[in-house]
Image (cartoon, rainbow, N blue to C red):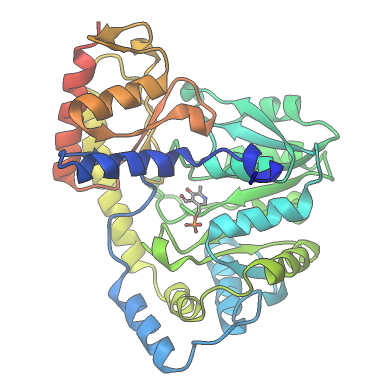
Length: 397
Ligand SMILES: Cc1ncc(COP(=O)(O)O)c(C=O)c1O
């Protein structure tokens, strides 16, 4: 039996397949350090787990409204106001089974075949997969490490057409850790407002992992474009709740209604107890999130210092999230034994096979020069990994 055209055109997630390869190596007894996954290595804060247990005891075991529990959506409305200066009503919020579902809902509800979806590259892998699934045409706009992988207003303007329906970006960014400043977002908004048919998905799931010392700024709070922005967020990264599968968005009402309709046919409301626990998390002070952020900041410093000692790696300083995205193109054309390096994935395979460090090639994020390393790992692992990477890369001639 054949699979559908839709599934045939969707690429498999490279991060998930690399993580699987690392697990296979581990299962063979090899001492693998995996720097592949976008997942905090902390456990969910205790008070959130307690809230989930209580939610079960209180009977949150049934279907919820498709868009989410009213009390949770109200907590999200308050969170958007408090943290992001965004004004929504509860009917503009849709809660989903992870931000990934939120993104899929939006893309499927807004794009028609051959509509253009603009992705500043590098971008998070699933943006491309979801857009392809929707039948849209992906337009990748390459950004440069020397500009901290950020798209300029001129580059944006040069790549928008009357057919551009969506632009999707994350700030802080997966895979680069880059973060757009308020001024940079204002400058982009000046371009966006010239294209009233353009909807921008601002993925802010790494909002709480921000090292700048400045409050996170949401592009949706800029009045001139606010009706063109849908703000996506979720519990996974800032609250160490990846497995709970709760994401959400604040959107123009027409889009919230459409996503509600779509989700009603696919999955219905997200997990009830997880919603209730997330509500408690959003209503609480952010102390636990800040503790995790501080720990990531310390690791970033350590990892950058160690990677900085490796000749040939070009690094910038990521301002958020928990990834570094070094340019490895200086190694292209070099080799060691049977390993010939011509692209990031060659480096990834070389590192995994020879020193058992698992990373992800930039290609799947739309970048042909870099490799993504997640530093959501212990300091001991980071020290060990950086030593192994240096040992391997120093052998390439
Ligand atoms: C930029 C970005 N957006 C969205 C997601 C998906 O988050 P969730 O686990 O809530 O589906 C991820 C997860 O890696 C991500 O990195």
